[in-house]
Length: 550
Image 1 (cartoon, rainbow, N blue to C red):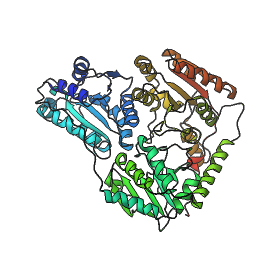
Image 2 (image 1 turned 180 degrees about the horizontal axis):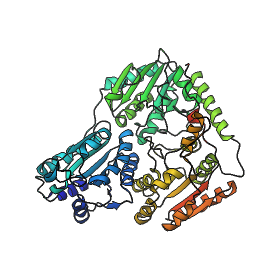
Image 3 (image 1 turned 60 degrees about the vertical axis):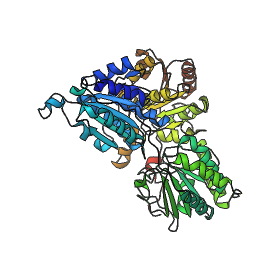
Image 4 (image 1 turned 90 degrees about the vertical axis):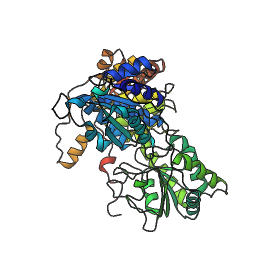
């Protein structure tokens, strides 16, 4: 079996939903073999970063890796954007690239760079194949590593002159088994939480969406409020036990809960810079932290813990639920009731903002989207200030429906939405993007049409990199540099790709434009709504969530 044929068979055996990229020197044999010997589709994207972003989004939606391919440099170097995002969010991905010819190594050959070194800082494992006879062994190890422990992308660089050489014996890849946590640790968690006067649960991005009900059952049984990590929404954010998000732009109730809790159950959370507001966040001096995570390296890394448990939350949460429900539930406490009232007041304050009846506001656009779209709509965000409006005005009824790429990868919106649609073909998928991020990957509208993946794309168009402009003005005496675009009309871009396009410049135009676009997507088409919004910015990023004196 040739190396290219072994790679194709391996792609089928790991059940990748697609192989994505742009054909080029070094990977042509892989693409040909995948297309002629397997049922795995090859997806041509308009840009390599979109290929890795699609796989990034697919992994968020399913927890499963997809395969992306890159041809030497510079094609391979562009893949790094989405790979970096998957690394930050601990999402599996399989990256195969074409290294320069092994025979010409060190000769400054065309496109010759050390690809394994390039990807090393942004992957769990980056390796160069040095012997074609070890192809399957290396690929299977890559598959094992992408899914073992805390997930993440892996990268294999393959000299392109190996592609037609013999690969050696083929061994089918096996899915790795997660770690098993001693029962005593699980019992200890429940006992410690029951002993608390002010128990709190922090739910991070590591909580599997399918276990959100288990987590809420634990919260109800222990009368413990739940704080969500920054922009994750791992539980429905209007559930009575959810008291909001921690971190930049977070809720007052979440801050108070963290400040006052005496026992804190931390589930799948790394305590990122944004969640801790540059690590200013502090727990009460006598608080006991119980940190449960798949990766032992993050337990106790930022905050000291009373009990650290390495565990797969998909296994542990049902068992915690069973243990909690085996005893009578704790009655509502004054502590819980106080935090719930504070969160309700915060949500009421958000709902009572002053609406501009002339020029659309970004939060008004999000609010209208939430009213129009079904409860099971999957919202995919790009990067920009408007994401804070999305967190506040686009509540979700089920976990896993809200995806902001916390690596802040601009350009993610459209390819990310395609990845979400591939993962969930029957779901309604909406990409909410800024004008800056949209222009980076708007060519993928053609990809969506070609693949038959209906999407709604809503562009928050203020002809500016608004979030950066806001920070510049706050820090440089009202000045801003390099953040303003000229006049832009993205409905014309949509038409160029055969996509429905609508433009809304007045507040009164927003709802009708969105309604028409939603019907187009429900009918199987793609649609872009270009909303020319006001200069209003979400203040959260510039307002201290965690007082520095606390």
